[in-house]
Length: 415
Image (cartoon, rainbow, N blue to C red; front, side):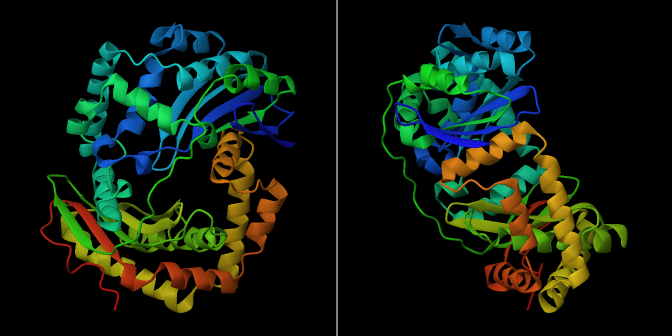
């Protein structure tokens, strides 16, 4: 059973009762991520994610950890370009504990100067770790090409210089103006009764917060090529295209064609490049959807001596897909896989909490599992053909590479 409510201060609640489990997953979703930051704030959203765990209300960082561990609970958070989510999972008898702690973390973080200086070191180590990761380096490079000098083109983690400039007062003001009632959704999934809404009203609804809307600038996709020459063992390579946005129902057709083309061990890319020729260890394709924007990318980790051959083989698969599309048998297999993956993921209350929380934050209508299955079943050869032509448009081709090579100008010649 799906339930929607609005707390007295305007915070929205999306809840899905799953009576056959004994646990509850609660997530506080904030419509704020790196896309909402000014240049001089880049990385503050992710830094907030760290700082709220350093103490909140009357609890120290150790208290938060001990209280969750003492009831066998789990607590974590993540930051994306468009949202931040703080979430906890406990047995249903301890749900008040997680609601209490989450409310303090979101509304009463301590943000002490001492803790902030200590946690800056942690985030700086995280940035350094990403800089040593070829995959992370190349995706930051790709986003920088595609979205340019906009919040979408900047790294979610920020930069050391900006990180070091953030003070407790700057962070408090940022949270005051971005953590507003119109910008927060609480998502609940699992075994609970109606008393949970009283708990949410007690710990969240009574908070006095701004009801201002949080806005961000639209972005436009820009094609291009870029290389970051780094002393990696392999070249991390991306060939990307303009994709579809997060509200587009064509996503089901996109997932179907990519299930055959680039997702998983049975995909054409994996079978025809890794398995047939042994030229790569990792290769695949996927899409990233945002509000009003999106990308579709093919990525691979390649030894420098194999990069031209792998590029040629990927181009061959792209051209074949555009010319021949999918067969009826391939589409049927893709839809069966999509339905199976969806049904199995829906058995985890954490995944269900994320689904309903993200949808509510975006203002999308809640879909039952039966409705989602019907969307997948409605995918046909024509809808797949249309989305292939739309997404794999050579005029939007963007190439990014990180590793020991000198140029990407001759890679991925599609015409």
